[in-house]
Image (tube, rainbow, N blue to C red; front, side):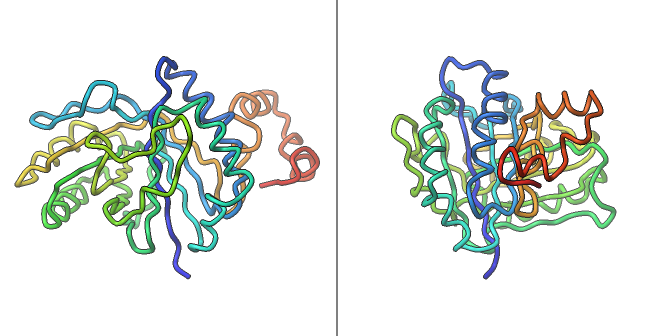
Length: 268
């Protein structure tokens, strides 16, 4: 059965600082999420403030996103763990500690696509997320073509959010509802070297005609791969502070699979 993807658009809890949000999402909430069965890959993208784009509305004050999570599953059956597992219940209980809003799009097979340069990824890739609402299919395709012509582009992944089901995830005390501020049709994950700047992407957006109803461009401050190839990464098991301490000490035996199996019952 073809692979499927879930995208989460996230806003931090009101009054929570951005550094605390990032640390808690990565090292507490994210480590719990790595235990959800069925994940093929799970990457957290911690966002900077949206890049200002002339002529486009950016929503009401306080509506900006602070994180985007992308989770891939081998099949729709595997995705069942996201809603039905015991860990998923614990995730919901923890969301109130972290999120003001958590909007999950369960995308069907074929609702996302990946284009990449044959030369491979940049040594230190820079990620952006571009969200659009009201862009025509022809306009979106033209935008992708403009971006693909940039020499700094390494990967371009498209997510057709309008094909996703955003109504299945319900958390008491957290906003899970679609609204005028958070509803988009298309999301582009743009990965390249540092020559592919927010300004360059913004110029590409300005080529859209007619202009879309809403555009948001988010540079990514940090990306954290928590699960890869169906197994939690060391980061997803230990947290960044512990992992950096182990690396700084040169204590490679602390990353031994037998030790992690003893501590956590699972190893990368």
